[in-house]
Length: 286
Image (cartoon, rainbow, N blue to C red; front, top):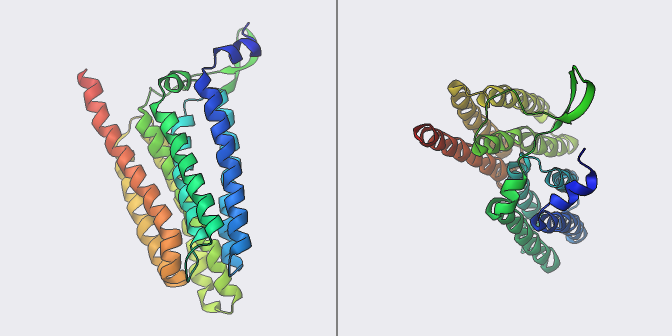
């Protein structure tokens, strides 16, 4: 029987380095968010929503640490999306409506950006991590030997890493759509009651996008070509609708702060789909 101590010995040194790097990134996210709140000129409802969304990244980094220590195969795409979206989630906070960002917040953001780049570089450039992050989640198994909780490979055929990246990137569509929708509630609180139907519609679209992405990625990982085409259409549609609502309810400031992160996530999804499609013929030919 494999013991926890034996598993700890087999972990390469890169795992320990990445663990401390992720912990430092999580701490930096909290510090930069606190600095931005302290130096912000306007501490309104919108800033509170965006700050809370940025703080949730700390929980994401803690979950990523757990995945890395357990050698999960999904840690690499999860780390990539988390690092990229963290830079945009925190970066949109430090830029005020007027003037230049406060120096402490700008310096903290620069440190956070360097940490995120280091995380992505280590995840995708380290051979030791690539060979270590190959395990699948544990599941409840019932067989002739009884009931056990152990690692089980998925029944679907093996998929390219870029498909996993596209799946994780697409899963951010829902949250990235709902965050500006929640920010738009501030316009209702300010007395713009005519915005209520639009905000309700926006919220419903955000929920629907999450289900549509779940449907597409379920069949995408099972080799259905039409699922990739459908995911492209969903990506284009959600970007168009979200940018329109951001401009309509939040103005140019909201269009930049909340529309650009979704645009980047959609671009990463489309890029990952393209790379997966280019890798598949080469693998088949090989």
